[in-house]
Image (cartoon, rainbow, N blue to C red; front, side, top):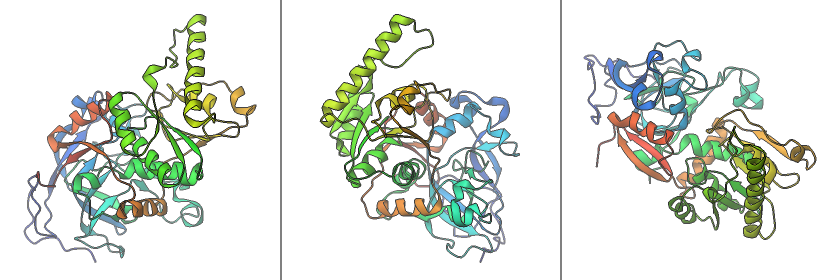
Amino acid sequence: MPLEKHSDPMKRLDLSTVPALGELPELMQACVIRKEREGEPEHSMQIEEVPVPVIGANEALVLVMAAGVNFNGVWAAQGKPVSVFRMHKEPFHIAGSDAAGIVWKVGADVRRWKPGDEVVIHCNQSCGQCPECNGLDPMACSEQKIWGYETSYGSFAQFTRVQAQQLVKKPKNLGWEEAASYGLTYFTAYRMLVDRAEVKPGDHVLVWGAAGGLGIFAVQLCKLMGAHPIAIVSSPGKAELVRSLGATMVLNRREFDFVRAPDDGPEKARHRSSELKRFGGEIRKLTGGKDPDIVFEHVGKDTFFASVFLAKRFGKIVICGATSGYDLDFDVRHLWMRQKSIIGSHFANAYQAERANELVLDGRIKPVLDRVFDFPDTAAAHQLMKENQHQGKLAIRIQAPKI
């Protein structure tokens, strides 16, 4: 049953102050983006006071203890490639698609969760009523949305509104900041590899950005499932990180000059092609002469042409995003003549999130938290991510006390 409104509600709640369960302020602090200031995250994301959202019958209100930083917050801040204000009607946008917190209030039809439960939030929302939700896959729902990107009330606020089906148990062995850091990227990587690419023991999996938010989980999932990750990184420090996660095949892509530029002439194009072949040769040295069975893609423009080239005959390229650009081009002959497959993947459904979370609850998959920021520094954390000055995940401490 939903909690009754407190007889004398607080006007506002101080950061890092956890009130008595059920006390609900009228206003909350949130890191807000507005249409008129879309641009660099450090300027577009600002702390404001907004009303605490009202929940529906199948929704829950969560006191956000900590939130995770993802690249979709950078997109939201910039208004690129699409302004979030084309996706919802609210006059403001609260970004954030990862959080851990305490269930504070539940709607009348919620049965699985109750106030006081400690939870992690996954970011897929769907209608729950259509045939696709009830027999195919909620990701096929015509109303499917990513919470905190295509909806306004995301995680960078003291409270957030979510569908009850978005909740999974918080691992007891993790602090709030660690628990808030893994949902979006880990559940995405799980669906990409386990469901969409159907990774098998013995597969060689090329992982771009292996020290980033997605890559750290792709490496761990490969190891757990008996596959062999080929970890591609961009610095010696990141190489050290992925080795600590169990990767034994590691390459620094900065040592190869294969990324193409718009002004490349014929001579430069030949050089890039030669470098890509050299890169492929180094991969085969690591694998004992084998090309990747699967390429784990999320970089996009800078790497996709290489992914299509590098995958083995009948290999798979699975892609969930394109942080370096969406306008992809590649030599399609490598695709059809060698019968490779390009597979699109988008986050995960509730069942996949639940199964993936069990591996964290059991301690078999571990988040890699690079840095934790205080709530006023939310914009700075997103700026750092935009500039690729991080490894692992970044988290924002909101209501969690600073230890």
